Length: 191
Image (cartoon, rainbow, N blue to C red; front, side, top):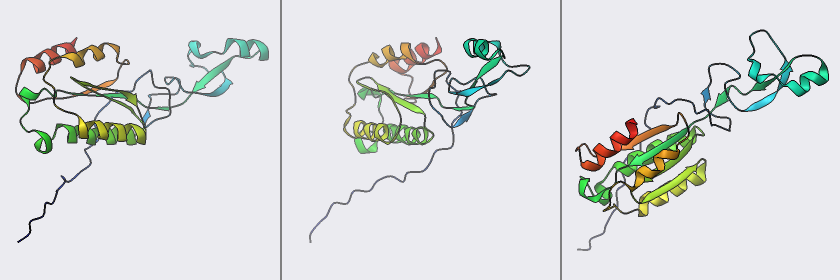
């Protein structure tokens, strides 16, 4: 009798939308509505001043030329920055390789965020994929998760947390066990 190997992949299901705040550093049209026009930094044009418009949006040069108060108008939709922070330390993992689901969950969230035109970066002990968006970013994340090995070192991923855009989102994937790495990462995230 001849035996054959069959590889079975997990069922991929879409995760529900996760709550996020809008990044004031966003520079492209995105999925989220800001509270009112003028809070985004995406310039869409100018118009005459109306009572209640923010003074900081008055276009003084154009107002001087036209002898009328003119304000800059900004897009109402924007996007945000998402950091996927994974604790991939070898000693704290429950499942290894194909049994581990940390990467699968992070990849699912990355796919949803990229579909919403958000910028996504991935951090772990030995991996830093900078912010990016679009299909190429998702392919890059998939490739790194496929070939990335678990780390034997501790907290090297924390150095990247100092330069995150304001109001960006961080999703921290870690074992339930309160290891030294997890405790220290949580302490750093609370600062």
